[in-house]
Length: 143
Image (cartoon, rainbow, N blue to C red; front, side, top):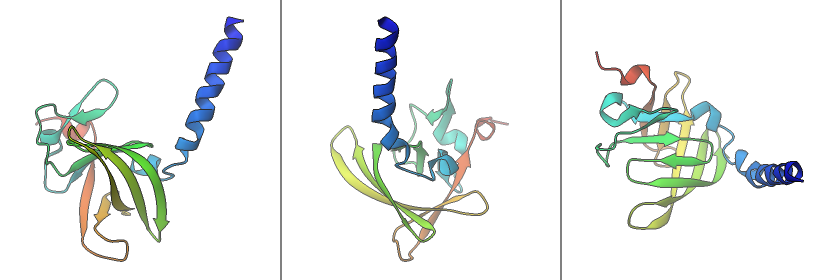
């Protein structure tokens, strides 16, 4: 009886989580800790047991974010991915973001570059792009 209940609970969790897995098809390609070019990874991020996270005493205005399949986090906000809409090479990501003050909707436009960087645009049609690079455990080591 207990084994059946465990299986049912596991099946229920899979069914509830399954729709979220497809929320951001490119998440595997762009998953990780991203930082605007020109800033040191070690100044914003720290290595943790299973992942890279923001430094606890870091700058809340750092031009950085962490992407997982269902979330986008900044030093200031934690966001849930609501929807992702492709627009050519770009992905329009609608978010529900929560800070210590409020919860609000947000939108971000990304396009991966061939060189492995990630561009964040201010417009779907064109506009200015900010270029971000991926930080990893190696980039957090101080010389």
